[in-house]
Length: 362
Ligand SMILES: *Cc1c(COP(=O)(O)O)cnc(C)c1O
Image (cartoon, rainbow, N blue to C red):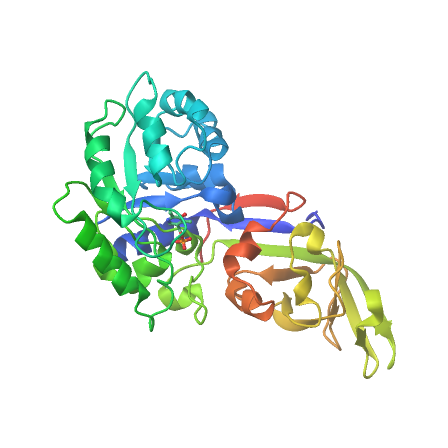
């Protein structure tokens, strides 16, 4: 019998399709597939195992990289924020991880360390994001010193990160690209700038390495589109089951705070999914689910373990499957309804949700 627990079904064929879509859009670039935050909630190790063609994998933190190594992933892994403390360098060398170096102190600590072997370094320039990155006026000096450091393996790679590549009408991306070209002019080394939105929107930024995250999971990084409009296939389906069907009369208030009052008599499905599973509380009175393929509205507040759905006269029974997001109910739309981004919804799925991996991709 199908478990009535919330389920996340991960379609690895869709993941591979999206990877091919990246290659189609950026045919001359290598791919650093971004797997941080448990592969955007999809399960980091399974995603890494499926993306056999990715040239490198990117994670934010050392423990994520070590989990991939412990899981038998031997491919290049890049720490997107580098190291946080020089103590970590021995393990980084032992595990053969690559580093992004993004500020002066980090570069100094790397050059001063005594390492058993040199490390591959990507030097990150701040071109306008103003979060991480070497200041333009420090770039030349650090590039030259790092290039000569015994702790740096091979040629430096040069990278930067876009702040607004999802917004086509802003000049920010063109300006960042121009500054990157200007500052790195004459320096050897492969270039990497493009996140998903830049893979989709800014081919002039693709360079030697693209760094897609969200689009690999079949989701659009732009506020006004969904993945399928970019020939992507959503990888995750979040689903659960109806655990009760009940009748309410006109005037009955439903759920905590009685925030929804039935205007006429109707039927409700109670579904095993709540904010304790990572489903957003803001969806109360504000979003739809799919039951037996039909879009039906959530009424009342989202509780920790349950939501209530107005099913009217639809033929819905206990045990029926409910889709919270997936191919026919884009997570991008839910994100808009609850005033967030799909990145956050995907990352918020909790360990209560049962994961299964399939290869279907219809
Ligand atoms: C997270 C991240 C990416 C991927 O961004 P998406 O918008 O998910 O494609 C690329 N580069 C860096 C440095 C990142 O931190």
